[in-house]
Image (cartoon, rainbow, N blue to C red):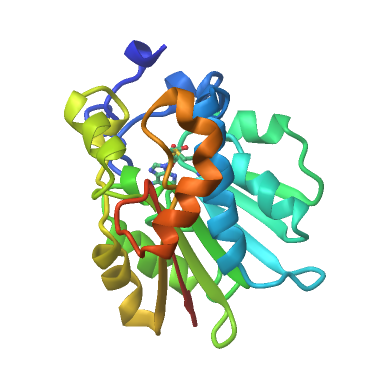
Length: 238
Ligand SMILES: C[S@@+](CC[C@H](N)C(=O)[O-])C[C@H]1O[C@@H](n2cnc3c(N)ncnc32)[C@H](O)[C@@H]1O
């Protein structure tokens, strides 16, 4: 299915580094194998720890929502979610989830179709890796976030994690086209807008037979303040 995808820039749609349209129907398989499940659980735990406690009706914009995997997570936590994505096929899959109180629309994150300050929280989870200009997207997310009092959150793949670096070096899409970020780069993206909070997470064992130890290796990685977990979460209060 991956071979059906085309380079988004080559296709004349310059907002994205990779066209997820061809893999929309199968994208969620990433979350199914044990390693994917273990990683996703640890990513969610890290996001949950940083996420503001939702009050009834708080509006959250999920930028690069893909199939709605994270939109569902935010929805269950009580946010009223709007998801946007540049790939129509991804938006279609997200809509099929029928997440209560969530709406999905097609949009380029570089030019979000929302008024200033329309959302209490804006979040982009593993999206910045795939956009043409991450700095511009962050600026656009900030524009759409309520000020003062709102929050902007980023979740990205860590360039310092061996797992991610190897995937990128292997040259297979979509990793080959992705821009990976270090914890310092995430901090630098957030710093112009306030005091950044950045955490490294998802310290998953490399050996499949040791995956059941993931909660332990994750605890150890965080305790030792290692910078090499697979996932970085960052947030700024605006
Ligand atoms: C790696 S996927 C992540 C999807 C979802 N956030 C998740 O974690 O399951 C990246 C998503 O970003 C979307 N994307 C890439 N460039 C975009 C842009 N300029 N505007 C909006 N969405 C974009 C892609 O279509 C894709 O659905």
